[in-house]
Image 1: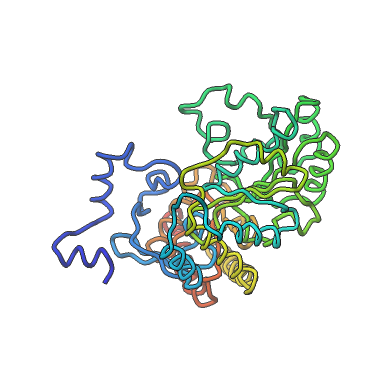
Image 2: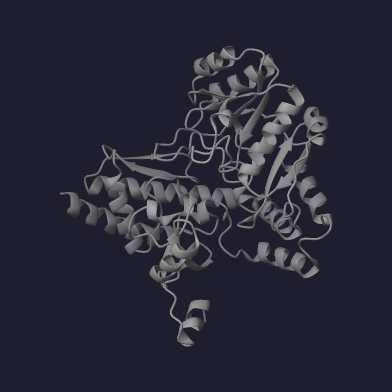
Length: 417
């Protein structure tokens, strides 16, 4: 019996609508941030009951094939047995103690052994922690303040990088200089505009801005960013928070022969357990030691045990290849369906981190209608944020999901004519 079934058997019915009403009284806006379902489409549930493999169930009991994977953290599938056993074994010994467990050293050793650009690792809890910490290391190392970053890129929710200016001051973004992603000329121009002041270039492995088609990095841009950082004495920081462990276990720019000075990791690192990390080169070990950067829960051992089990499982299995195969199957199926129903679509990004957009859909009305129809047919994806594949997505799961997306295309065509 699920928790909700137990509550209902006791005469207590919990519904998504009821929880939203209760939340509106005790939570600002009822929900906030990127998980606020009110900004997606009316059909989206806000509250969920459980997950298993590549499926999730909302509190109203509806089942979905999950292509958001909890917005990226779940890479092996919900409640993966190897990860859950590792987490449970550590929890039985302790989690938040007076100091870290031995597993912290073991996890750091694993990252250093796995990632060619890593000579050390520091841990925290969220992707924002990691990107902020990486820039602190770069500034400590260089004695400079300016940071070059791509226009529209998402690097977290702290005042220096949040997409919303509410509650922030202009000074908190005063040291940021923007460039156009994949444009070396723009990057060079940004660097020249603050010559001698650049501490870091921070860049995502590919362009994955919300509301926009994704854009794979051009190898020449990646290599040029590395060369520029070397020439001006700045740190090259890869924000691998969203893409890490789904493209290449060694780091997302490793296939291009580009190794960063610092990398920020989180999301898929522990298959849903809260953890983040910064890895860096020996040249930055000393500056990293000078930081005062900490948190009461940053050294909790359970998430570290889960991360160790997750990374070892990805390393020792065909997890990334499985995601690539499932992602290719999904992409090919959606392409054929869109064409058969008379839609022109774009599918962008790596197949393990896919997204679909409709041509001419500036207000996202078509995407909103289609994704809502997908929900009704048991497929959970998103109208304006990229999706995520997991190693739990089998060929049969994707085939079942494609039945739902096909019905959604038909309903969307009928609605728009």
